[in-house]
Image 1 (tube, rainbow, N blue to C red):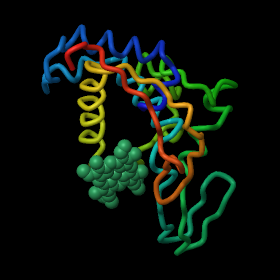
Image 2: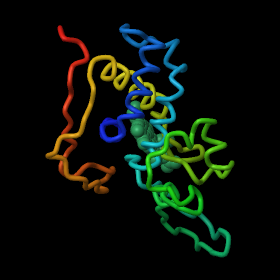
Image 3: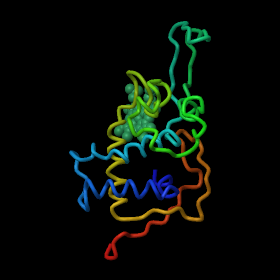
Image 4: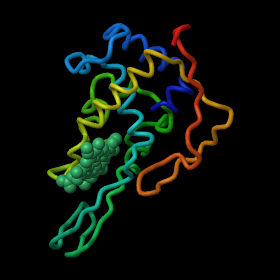
Length: 184
Ligand code: HEM
């Protein structure tokens, strides 16, 4: 998210404005976190483009028909949700662009009620138990960064996301933080 906001200064500014409108210079509080609408769209779009999980493991316990496919019993499956997150048939020609406004009216509208199109935390009864924790933590951390610093990308940065258990920046993410306050 820090990387995407570093290269999309307009969204960084929108997110910062929202943070100051809601929290001012105060530490984010649990009641107001749910009011961060713009930041929520930024988090969803980041999870779509660079979600840490590429897929979910499943096993067919018995033979099942899945569309045109017949899956034999005891078949192990990796359902690669990062493929649907990058599918132009689901997201349009600008699928590879960072466009948080896709989620302006919520996830259901963004995916046209097609639940498999966006599932960075998995699906069904075994989906991620840490989902709300992870999103809340990201909102608090990002709010506190935006209250204090502007973020820009270092010229040293080399773009190379790789799936290594989770999706990771192969060479790290070098950013430049500049204080918004002279005394900070
Ligand atoms: C952005 C952060 C995270 C992402 C994208 C993520 C994604 C996922 C995914 C895709 C699954 C598999 C779901 C499925 O098979 O349907 C999963 C499972 C799980 N996650 Fe996360 N996760 C994140 C953060 C966390 C955190 C912070 C915790 C703990 C505090 C956590 C705990 C778990 C656990 C325990 C499971 C296994 C649930 C089960 O099998 O019943 N996750 N996560």
